Length: 105
Picture 1 (tube, rainbow, N blue to C red):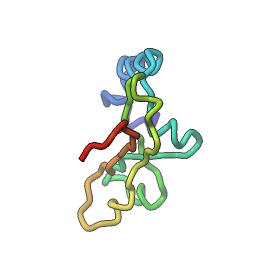
Picture 2: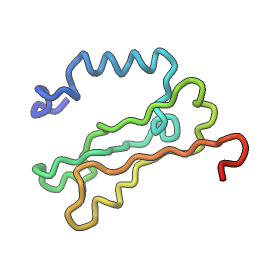
Picture 3: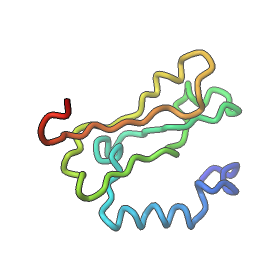
Picture 4: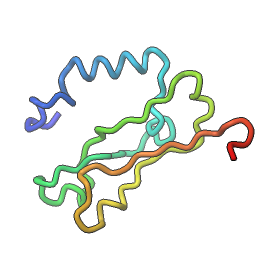
């Protein structure tokens, strides 16, 4: 954990433990399921020069799927390309794709 983040709730042991507990209860981290080895970031600190260009970010945003939906996961990712737009957010949108029985239209 970078020293500058130690006082942030994202890195509190309680936060990390609660996240681990959700995974133990059967919830699926959708992005990690689809990209198990890839470094995936959803956040880049604007004050950290070149963090986005050097792919030096954090994965703060997670999409968890309930056990009942985990077998429907077909895709997941982060659209980091929006970070190249003028005045982007410090977070990039994360998404999932699920199969669904029957037609929805």
